[in-house]
Length: 66
Image (tube, rainbow, N blue to C red; front, top):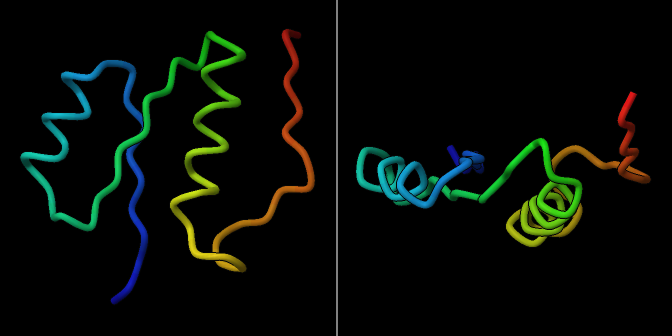
């Protein structure tokens, strides 16, 4: 179908398990939602995985601790 499937995982073990259990089309991204830098890195990684002009577009990433 051409769909891009991205799984965000807290641990490397989680990423490895997903890759073993799923199609080669699945991409994994490390993400700790409690860490601002990790969220920003995951956002950039997802943008790099998706083809230009595809996927949901965000003008900015708003981080709030509230």
